[in-house]
Image 1 (cartoon, rainbow, N blue to C red):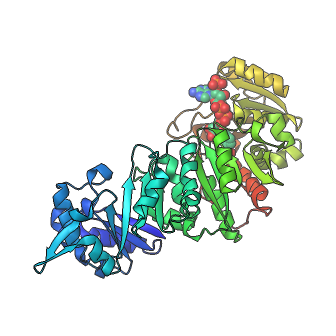
Image 2: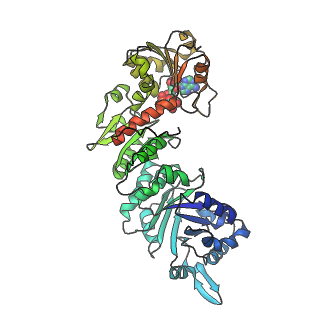
Image 3: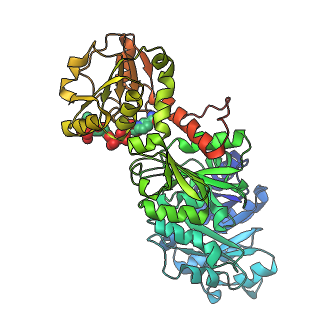
Length: 493
Ligand code: NAP
């Protein structure tokens, strides 16, 4: 189930939020602590104002909530509002039964017993915004001990912590009903793969940026289809650091949906490649993309690598085949794809490659393998020299770039200069386009960089990084699924 957390300050705004997200979620969580004081009294009626089951929560500050009142007042209010027709009521694990006593019509009750008698499910919650408690598995068992739903929302800080969260399913098998949430950037993969963790639900918001890693309802439902995951769903992903900006989930998930392939593609923030391979084996990850800074680091863990990967010394695609991890480099072919008509016709004889990093290495090898004479210009000349030796190219300082104007058929911009948020920058401003060059920028955000717009104004043919990104992604899709990328799918990258 996907559960929309309501954090507006009026009931009406919360109801409007439910209406806007109704198609994406199965239930909602009403948070009393974000409501204005005058609105809290009206909260009892909310279950009658929506067709979604409602979780009632009044979160105190120490658990990440906003309740402004004393603990006694908070619990009194919770007892009062919980008389409404809620499907679930969230009670923190350390709140004692004796703290939830209340009087009604002169009679004394305790909230736990009355909720159980009315068939309302209690969610026993534990929050840790600093990390993972050492006794995490024991806590889950304890929270569920009275037949309640155990909820643990904790904060992983590494892939090892993420592994611990995935182990909950195995370690506390007896607890059938639990909610497991990894908060913060490391926990995003656990929120998307909540069903693989054995979690009953995952919380979502409207729009992104909750600060604790919640995804927006529509992305979770339509892009990830997280609620459709079953035991046969194959898991794929992208590893990087940072990784949450990656367009690859868009490319791969849209492709999976279009061909009805039972698979999900998830971003994994990674600190240590070795730990990630452990997670990959544990979760049975079938394949993954690799982005900065791990393209080299994955190599020692691969049983087999393609010819291009070996030559370039960098791998951007890993697939699990015949019990072995195989490394490929689809950047190589993604780069060549838009140029292949011109290469086939012999229209590219000399090329200038700006930059000498990982991407420049793939580009230089691809061009050299097609008999193009390459000169590498770079800010740090030593890096240009090293790459030129590897690829048998010429090299020069970026400061001398003006000397190559009019002398090359192709200019490839491979540095990160000009990428958002520095879209006004251009590493090659000294180069004057004559109009006869093909200009290729690997930067894909923005779609038209200053480099490309200068080239266009001079009359050059241009190729943007988004095209290469899509081409390399389509090739990854083929390696993952064995099928061609569906022709009518156009991911917005
Ligand atoms: P990298 O290995 O870190 O290399 C960065 C390169 O940029 C180095 O040559 C570096 O020069 C140069 N550079 C950085 N800041 C500079 C500055 N202010 N002025 C001049 N030169 C500067 O990175 P990478 O993996 O090659 O990636 C580079 C870019 O390509 C990124 O923007 C990446 O997103 C993009 N890319 C796109 C695709 C695609 O499919 N479109 C695929 C792969 C990569 P020094 O040697 O002097 O440090």
